[in-house]
Image (tube, rainbow, N blue to C red; front, top):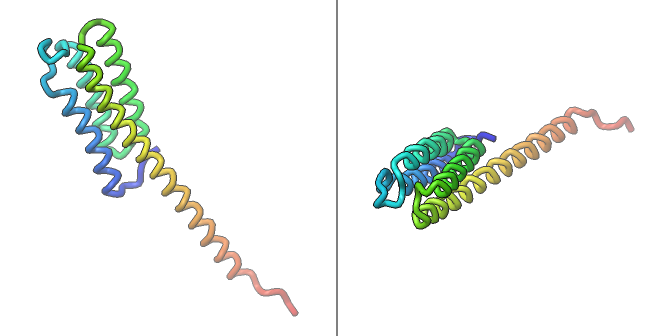
Length: 136
């Protein structure tokens, strides 16, 4: 589902993507930071997907990309390419981004439902106005 383009939701989505990117990219590429270079590269690609979808106001695609990021994160941990501390840090941020994206989706669905209800009300009023009164 794509969002209409209210600036507030767009900035929340872009901000969310930026937070994930910043958290992941800070100090990545070194084993001292708790993240192996190859794992960092793969996770960065996933973060880019989340950020891109967020900047395009497409929270559903951003959620799918976030799921991919989380899968890559688990794979990196199982292969010993990321420390537990670093994984927890990224997971915490991903959870916050997921909440923002879910909120954006819910807001978009509510706005669509409100718009549909308003259109139905307007159509009913127009139909009522166009119907001649019964003959007496």
